[in-house]
Length: 193
Image (cartoon, rainbow, N blue to C red; front, side, top):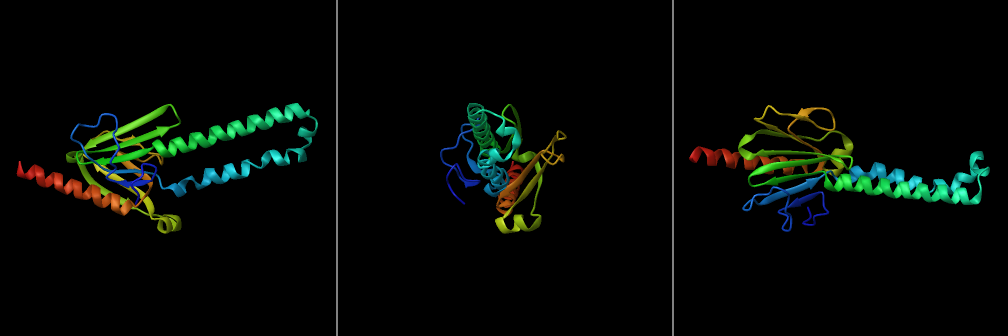
């Protein structure tokens, strides 16, 4: 658990402000996918870095001029840099935010499509988490699913219709516990009114 905004699980982030945040609203948790979920594309990039070194083994490249091979190599590395930046930005900006008033889930699909789900705490009904498999257990990651009173559901990455599904996040047990406690506090507050 770190207090850096670069972390995948931040408790009480001090400098965090988000679009449409209320003046008195306090951010309790900021989270994103567990960093280990980046291992797949990072491994691919590490392998792809060395591909130009073996281009001479392909007959097609032997027929090209040195200048053409240089241009193709530059294009290869520029594409690779774009791929790294794209994947990092998608990891960094796909976040969930838990505040003392509501839940905010920001999902980017590519750089141009964004879905933001927001639910007030009094609309939250149930929270569950799951950890499936060895990787989830070893790295303490999993999914948190929050059911709301709303009929409006949006598909998550797995295609399941749910208002809030935080996938492959760090410390799903703690996230579910915090949200559950906030739901209980909100219900208690509403009973007193």
